[in-house]
Image 1 (spheres, one colour):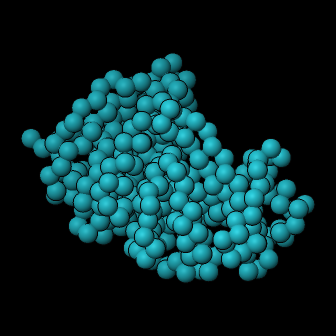
Image 2 (cartoon, rainbow, N blue to C red; image 1 turned 90 degrees about the vertical axis):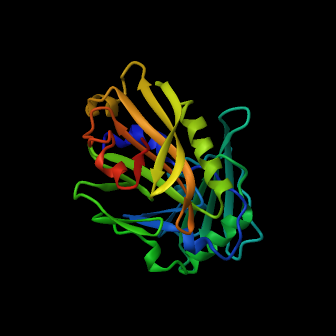
Image 3 (cartoon, rainbow, N blue to C red; image 1 turned 60 degrees about the vertical axis):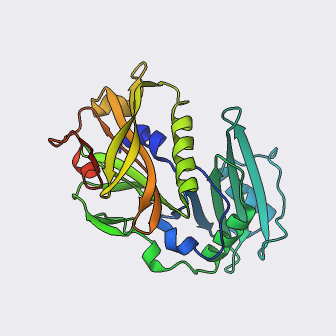
Length: 297
């Protein structure tokens, strides 16, 4: 798990675009992790968690603390939702053109308990998108095949089943880490514009991380799921080497491939990465990356 704190800087899906209401389920994936459920669709990560507390001011204050909500945060009721709720939006400026936005919904569910659904963006939030996914969650309308098993022996990668080693595990929904064998994250999108925007935002945000430096950056030709395409290859180094994950990995640099393209009937954004001391095959890639991508000669 120690390696994942660095790799997750690269692998978090980030961007929300406008959506249609009838096809989220086709691209939605989820993982249950104890009391929290993690979701991903169209490059958007969001979570849901239910507390046994009742929807009272006193109990809400207790739940607010779990999400670092303070008295200064503006609390509004979203009258367009068919549930008693408190909606809170928090924004933090990242660059002149990027803001990190968290959209929290504290909802009184059918069991009269508090369900919290939190969306994270580096773009303008889509209220229609939020409302539809909230309804799917609260009305229990998400099919079981959307949920991945916590124990990984195989993954559904954009419609293809891929067998993995016993050492692999989820670090987030649609994010698989195989220690010393590589890590990858992917998301299914409605269109290629959404997939490309997700990749460009991930590149921009990762480049701002403290202690991280870009050693090299180039476009390379690859075969991604047997489709010829172009990936952005970035080699990252670390200044100070103070991060515990860097020390534990023993690696000095991290190699990452960013790409977006159509795979079968899906548009996919994907980031694949590995440390310079991970096990690699003759083609220069670790076993996990080799399952979905090959370098063109």
